[in-house]
Length: 445
Image (tube, rainbow, N blue to C red):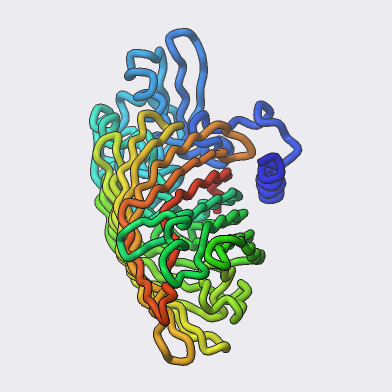
């Protein structure tokens, strides 16, 4: 974890215009960490009843501070910048436009004006809806978006929003799948004629991720893993155990999310997903009968999908449906196509914390070798995942987040077959845990 943190700091420093400056030498948003100097047309100032001064990059994060403090009554002064004049005006007297095509700071975009006439003129050109100060207070959640673990969000970050992530994943499978039945490997190997069988598989991986808002409707995501895999096999009817290890990079995953539609309150989103994997991982034909040991597929794949996200007060709801087609590699081996679906419900009690539950399922077609389907591959798996995210630091013009998750199988029904008294089956059960440290910042243009 120490190494991951150092990598994140170095990446953030690399892209920071003035990395040598301490945070208190350069005013930044109290919520997201973005530099106030880059948002002079939208910055807001808050002074609490105790005389504590705070600044935010815009109206949206100002409202998050107000709501987190219990309401406007907790402040002696609330000032916003008029979009046209740039002058400070009382937040209670301003007229606001939400959901325009102009996104100067955070999502959902809320821009302040000194008069209703100015707001209406801006709205006519750039879209959105008019809000009073009271309506603005009720228009957003504590968090602009939440990021699921097993599925993807339909909420696309604004242009220039950049995220770096490094993390670690650990997965353990320790039960033999007899169709939908979970069998202890020690019992499975005692079956008549069963001279060998899988005992346990452990996978550890370092994860590296990058996200970038190409424009306000299109976002790029890139990820790769460094796998360390270990499988224990029972031999000689269980009297011996053989261990196989395989390490290496995964295939490189690239995806694009395009927002087809969103409402003016930025509370409902519908997006399409297009993705591909590049064969950067290592495929070994000797693991033909143990595809879980592979670190790469040896070929390309293509993914299409539909994404929907909706805010419900302090909750975010995400759904996903995707289909992935995989090509045959140069060893005449083809991993089975996948159909994946899932839903997530995330609770955001404040702008620094998220907790949630996700459920997803994947249907795997059987793998093929030399045009023949492999009977002990393919099937269906579903998981329940608990996830929590904590924004623990604002610095370097952005914010640092820690995300933890744990996944447990809900239902598994995996293919297997028997040949000459020897049964071949896949492993299941166990659990998957992950930790991800990320840095997010929006770069102004």
